[in-house]
Length: 317
Image (cartoon, rainbow, N blue to C red; front, top):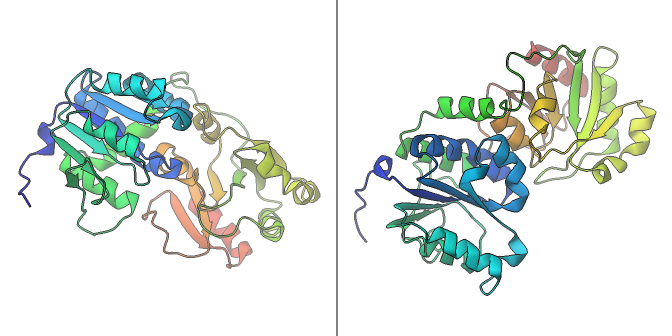
């Protein structure tokens, strides 16, 4: 046992292992951006999967990130030794290890950063010497993020705003969308992280409840997710589009629409944490870990979808 007295705001050089689960990654990215803004490019580096490159590019974090491919991150692989070499190019003051489900190669990489303090969110992980314990004793990634905002003296509201503004960097200054989308709502057909996927009946009831005042456009991360509902969408004459949700350009698409209806899917966290779009989340229970948000309206899947239509109209206003 020892007493930890160091002030996290004094750490100069920080290496940050981002979560492997993409829903948790989207929650943590505003924190990563805020730490980078305070430390600068010479004193910050993020470690993340190659699949996340486009999102980090949208946040201007690509040049301060090291990307790995999970299949080649094994001791003995050239990619692993290259990562080891890059991490040892300088001595780090703090290693912030935010992977919850990890393997020994990554924990070894955390150790060879030579950081005096190696902070993680699992007490049982080897090679780390500090375990994060937030005041609420919650394992929620949102609780961890709130705690980290405090110990790094980061204004949480400013961090959220800055992370959203960062996704506008590729758009023309002062550009305003003048498309006829004010009465159009997106319906994200991605399956939830937990629970049952959308049923044909649910899609039909939601769409019919919004007609004729509102139009719904079905989107998903892949065409395969849309194919399952092709017959129902054809009967409803509903437009659909396989949107590359995990891409840099998705933010420009989202800003054209006033709201999105979604389950608690992986990209629901992207919508909430990295965009301004209003999110209507249908879920089987109301105890979801996502905290109250001015842009989030929760609605039970067993509710009356006609009442949902009115709720959404008021919510968008």
